[in-house]
Image (tube, rainbow, N blue to C red):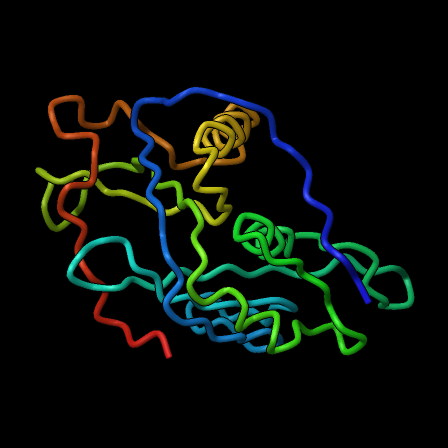
Length: 189
């Protein structure tokens, strides 16, 4: 059994080119142990969430990562799967991995109806329409009650050069808030 322990990222203030929106989880599919269709890699923990963002459509948010293992292959910490742990923490649901290194279905189901904050950032302008800003979604989420901490953590990662495509100055004449978010044509489940 592996329990997730959240680490506080610190506090921060809003930054240009960053937008945080609250999401309500409508449905969750546990895809742990499967190959991600676009990336082509298998992940120890992998969740696909359908979320309500107050628009006429419900986008899909995918969070995934691998557990850190010892030399014998036993999971010893959440490794890159801490992103999945942050989702559970942000939603107020305790994440515990079972002896099969999977998330029990009752814990997955407990996410439905819960809220989390998702950060989006400017990565450039859209190739198909250079009059529109290209927004990326960050794969680390936070609490709806504390957008500033999520922003501060993002900014700290930018300063460490871990977010390569953040570019808030790419289109200074364009709007910096995603007023027209377009739905995906992909079927999440």
